[in-house]
Image (cartoon, rainbow, N blue to C red; front, side, top):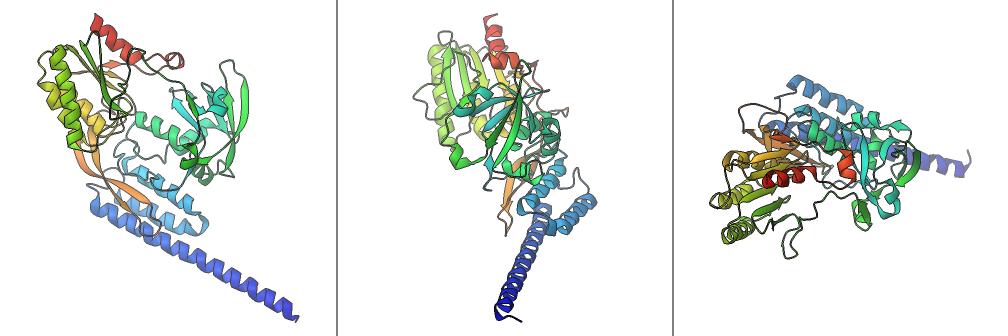
Length: 419
């Protein structure tokens, strides 16, 4: 046999052997991670099998392990997302999840809003600003309804329809997820199909980008704002601030962010209290829309300071604004403000449930370093169990208002104060 041919055969053999060993090692590492995932959740979760049975969960674990040789790394992650989602069945226990924090992913540069029967683009790059307001109909020729259904079975932090709407719109733009569920063949780009108000269709190829690269883009949005509400320039927080209306008779608190330190929340709350006392303010609006959560006891600090302000009309003029994003500690604070401050709750139901599994713990899998979150506590904040805190006044987002930048929730409150 030709000597060069022998050498080539040896090289090919070594390559194949090395590849097979690498694949085997990868499977072994994932088996180890999945076993660790299973054992740790059983140990740390307050009640792992409250919705899914131990038999079903164990069967799902075994099935994923059996499929490991045919799955890519990210497909394994997606299967763990799907299984973890089943722990609460998408109707409770959203804090037990695989959120992809710390996992390198790429996203397509559009943000969507779910208006119940259509997904519209509400944010995109300046280059593609002509897409704003258009309805997304397909990705790579696959109907958006099918993709939405598939991704909604994976999403973390999902406790009801409201949080599912938020998370699905976000996670269906993750290129690796779309590739793992075989919607796109190449995660670097995909063809998106849109429809405008007149029914005109447009297909455009969008590239996906890392978080770092997306931070360098200029984005265009469809803002929903009230022109008389402005963030003070001297506020130390981006999304925790207050301002006044009606010659200081109405205090508006934008509470979309929890500070990290109690001292910061005390300082902020004392500033609100001092302003109310100085101006004898009568009306109070606490806006918890867009708040994903944090430390619920921070909200109680604010509530404590507000509660000693005697000039507020506590019988009827305290309002808490909520939406589908209002989650975790923000939802808890909304319930507490209703109970402790006699607040009227305005908006759409929250993304978290008042009665259910709350309070997040986390751990990482030893080999993949994948982050897993789990529930540590069970909260019962009201007598009746509901999917989301139900508002006293329902105002569901409508495209016509969103398109025109009208904040219907705040408009309703300001009109109620004037009356």
